[in-house]
Image 1 (tube, rainbow, N blue to C red):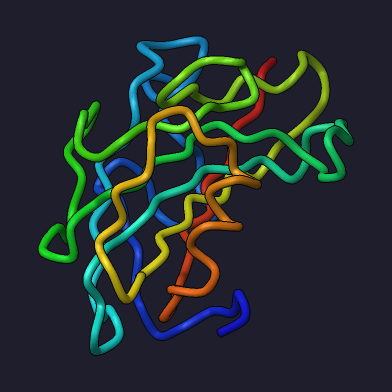
Image 2: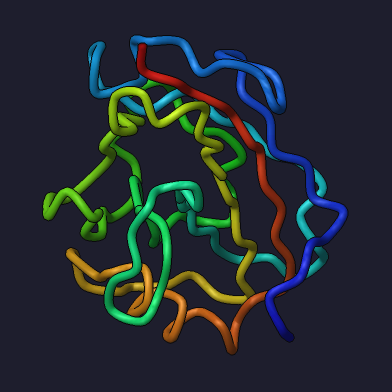
Length: 158
């Protein structure tokens, strides 16, 4: 299956779709991941992965655009939520060069950026090694993708 939206729903108690992400979830605050919950996974879902990407970042690197803030995988199909600051799953490498979540921190004066939080439903539980980049993860999970959807939040530094 190609990467395309499904009927799965992704929400956060921290912010509504296309609204401001609270400072505590950014590089200017506590820099912890927001709580997320999802529903409506396709039949046959056995695992999940979560990604956060800023397509508005003025970067083109390694053949892709934007900035990766979070790569998380090896989540069981029984999981339908992540708590604020969750340590569930296995962390990949973000574009800060670190493992785990790195919150929004657009350049000062760069305007509003959109942050896409994605959940990917997979037909198997993955057991991938820690530290995969977004590209590496997508290459591994694409053959197992059943559905996906996103929640978009915004953030702007003054």
